[in-house]
Length: 302
Image (cartoon, rainbow, N blue to C red):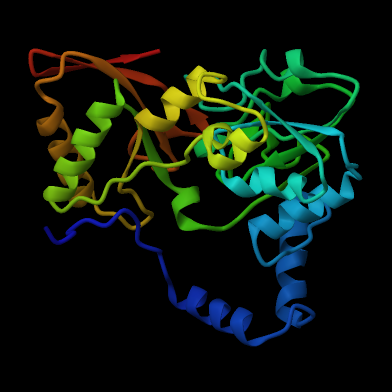
């Protein structure tokens, strides 16, 4: 069936068209580049360095922290591959830690338990706009924040990317605004994906746990090492959401989602990032259990 509601649509204004044109036709040493850097530094009060991609920013961070061959990096397995590959390029050893099932971020008790003499860097990933518990990572190690999905969020009033030694962002529409749903099983997610797409609604999944990928297994990991991460990876679903999405389209997605799931007597978790009229408010994520009992929805704020 033809897709009627795509997963995401970029929001483009007249000004943005002009800026994109300038960015694509001028060199990085241009006045445009310097002006963007100046605005970022004024807004955050810290040094800002613009790069061509989030991957490149990570690779620079790996060099700046001075990690050497054999030193260890602690990071979640549920993340984009560049979070890991940037440090592998420096011949570092990767130690994947478990995530918190209610936030999908690095488990604040798992990472500290992995600290050893060879540990050099901790890389918290702020997933879906939810900031990691940075107090639990207050150790004498370099902290590189992967804040790609946390533009505008904060931890104890400190903006994401400014709590650790360095942080980086990547301005990609599908990371700035997103909806995550953790379903009861991989089978339920597969069924829902098929039925939504048959109705012209483009839903999708997200990361595949790195530690069970061919690369991860080559590093000595195996299925079962991080059971929460593995479950999260195969049960998470992403629904369409973008800045200019109308209330009408939003309601179509919600109603179709509810109709398909009406026969399920189970519960699951919904996280919404940066859509003010849904579950997100003042940079605080609200978690809900949505119970479907005999076709009736009950919402309990936890």
